Length: 421
Image (cartoon, rainbow, N blue to C red; front, side):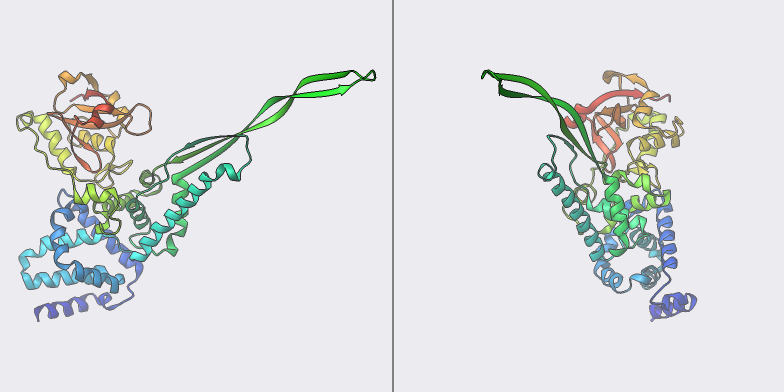
């Protein structure tokens, strides 16, 4: 009875709750408010908060929420938050703050589009990739050149990256018809196909036999020039996850990062994606830095700042908590915001350039560790913060503690460097 009374009061105070076709702009503004509240609550992202507290909520009401969202997509924010508040009133006011925050986090980080739209967009993008692959596979049979040279990247993308991009660009919700142009734009930016034809003048030897008036046979050999066509075909996969920083506003990039941090709370949507394993099923293990090292006040300050962002997703070009981070963005931000070294925003090579080289034998907790060849770029390609005992904290995917003694990191190791603390 109390819940019903409170619900009726909410309707009187917020008549827009009665409208089944709530103004879409109003809905989107509420999405943004819920997102901002989730981002500003404590030191956790919406994604991290959901990992810590949202699962319990999801386990209890996921079926009800799914049914409700399906039937009332247009009014989910007001009604959803209203129902949460009513449940809390029945359970006791003491739980209100925690569960409201959790509900905000879940809403802000969830994919809102219908499954048909999301699965359809993924299927269409796959068809576009398959068509590109067929074009390349049959290239020699459908073209008429003398010689072919192919330099082709793999044709691939991750479905969660695609759906998170579409959701961020379309303010939370989209239909398949609405994203046709966006899919084409993303495809053209991800896959850069270059076909260059070089024409060389080459010579072939020809023989001419003839008989003179005296009946003598003569044979002459001479060189004849001709055009020789060499076709160079190059396909660059720019990597779909690298596109957001180039095509999104800071607000959109921030929303994209939130979606990726929890895979839109839909790990069931694309179960084969490696993100499900590394973000949901087997997230990075916890690690405790040796307490003896924390006796160094500067190092303790550095680690306190760095650990605020454990679990944040890797976002190419990201450089702050709102957008999440890439490797150099994370290290630059931690160094600067710890108050120890104001580096500004530097890339991995730039961070190496402002450090004093340190040998492996003399590396200390707080030094930076640099790697090369982790992706196709000249110079230093990855950077982390060394915490001692063969471990670094770095923006992997997601931000985590990692042993540097694995074969992969040893293979790509370049140097240690010490910032000007």
